[in-house]
Each structure stands twice: as structure tokens, then as C-alpha cells.
Image 1 (tube, rainbow, N blue to C red):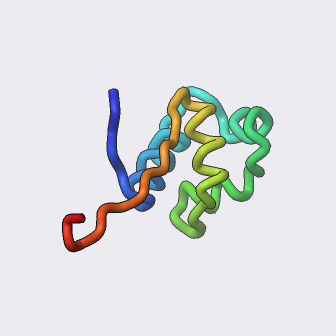
Image 2: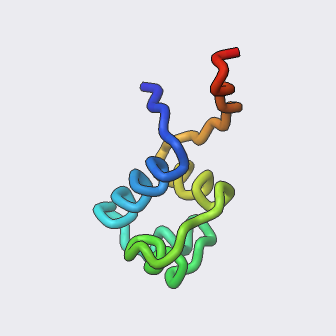
Length: 76
């Protein structure tokens, strides 16, 4: 399944996945290298994450982030 999201949509999807995961933030942190503090701030909306961190979290949850250039507003 392919889902197209902007960065805000990706943030929200990953936030929900971390928050409702069967895995603790400690385990997610240990397996991804993303600190528990960063995960907590992210889940509570106090901090955004970099695209690199988004890719790491997405991979942990079995997803892949694919970056594509945006279309120009002129439709070309």
C-alpha cells in the first residue's frame, strides 16, 4: 500500500504509531537509537523530528519513507 503524506502527516502518523505501539518507548529507543526523551517530546507535540529520525522510526514500524520532488504550482 502506498500512502502519500506531507511531513506534517508523516509526523502525525509516526506520533500515533509510537504512542499506540505494543512496544514501550524504552524498547523503541533501544532498537532505533532515538532517545526516550526525544520520543517523549515528539509524542507530546513539544518537538518535531528530522527526516532522518522519521526514516528510522518508519523502518522500525515496517514502513519506508520515500522522498519525491514536489510538483511546481504551474503544473509543469
